[in-house]
Amino acid sequence: MTVRLIPDDQWFRSRNKNGVLAGSPLTYFGVTDAGSKILDAIETNSLLPENHAQLTDRLLATGAVHPMPKNTAALSDITVVIPAYITSSESLTDLKKLVTSLAGLTIVIVDDASPHAVNIDGARVIRHDTNKGPGAARNTGIATVTTAVVACVDTDVMVTSQQIATLAAYVIDAHVGAVAPRITCTNNQSFISEFESHHSPLDLGPIPALVRPMSRVSYLPATVLVCDVQLLRNAGGFDDSIRMGEDVDLVWRLIENGISCRYVPSIECPHSPRSSMRKMLKQRYDYGTSAALLDQRHPRAASPLRANALLLTTATTVLMGYVYFAMILVVPTMVYFMISLRSTSIPIATRTQLAWKGLVSTTRLLARAIMRAWWPLFFIASVVSLRLGVMLTFSAFVPPIVGLLRKKPGYPIRYLVIRILENLAYGAGVWAGAIRAHSLRCLLPVITVRRSVAR
Image (cartoon, rainbow, N blue to C red; front, side, top):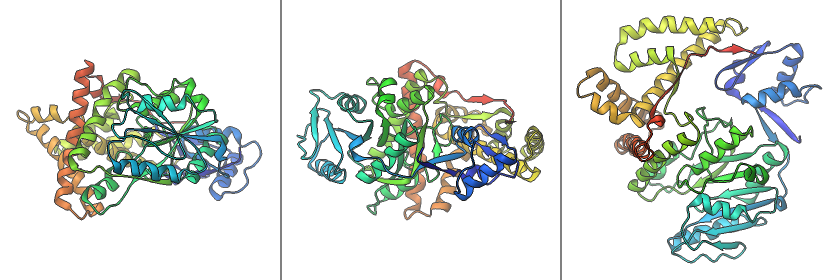
């Protein structure tokens, strides 16, 4: 492979001479002196020792290290497919700018029965007689591709040929099935662009990741998604029957087939914000409606919460306001997880830190699940239960207030209101989708009791 390996700082910060923490769920790799030399080489970007493949392959598979191709792919190896539904002259202008920025690449635009005529120089245009949705439009374009790599790109994002070529190198050189950049928000000095720059569901953050359901980066948006054409076809392409969440479904099918998918935030592509708060909230609602369909195809992968039973019990007491009881539970919880890691050589201070981070993370995720997927239940239950009302109130107001203090937005009151409303909108969508699908399984948490292990 013409790639180098870069460590995931999130895990390598906890490394000592005998091993490294990796992945989610937590895995501790104990290594020999030879393995320690390999870890040193990765951290210092030095030449890897011979016989490194067994360890580096396992580190790659757990997300402890990330590949970084040394060269970009040839433009001749890439085709760009753009699903287009053009409703105004402004969106047509944006599409023309996008095509111009992709100069040198083969471009296929699939006009999904747009009410506004699509005629773009420098691209092949295929037109659907009826609107079939973005997944079907991408499949139509992918069917015409003869190159090794295809890049699916939406009309309201800006990406260059060089960025696509860099992403394609992951597919060609690092044997990645699908890779996506960081989707940032175009700043037009409006409240919506400011809000989306902090909380866009398309922006998956600044840390690279191996994608896995229910992990820190659990999906990749098809806003810009670069794929291996053959692997994409083997997986069946996008599901035409899904109008929302079709990109998540595709990435999860690739992962279920043993194909790695990666998030590369070092490449940033600006995306246009929604034109109004109503449209932004509708987007969140629409995203929520996909949860039930995704759960039908990937059972439990779309669950609103995955947590350890002991950590969840302690987090619940915290959110209920049982302060003294929570303080009592924290001690055995921390001790349990420190003991569960005793078979490793992780220093006790690091074990304590990991246990505390696990508790804080579980509390945050529980509050998120309450305010997004479960708020209708908690709202009704709070009428008869003060403690459940406390949980709902805490979940509704504390995270936005923390975000307000950290982000320092220019419109603080509006920020707080929209932070709450976007969660309510998403949760309403989840319930609407569950009712339509006649299944509430997407609302159920995944509770684990597994102990951390050393390998």
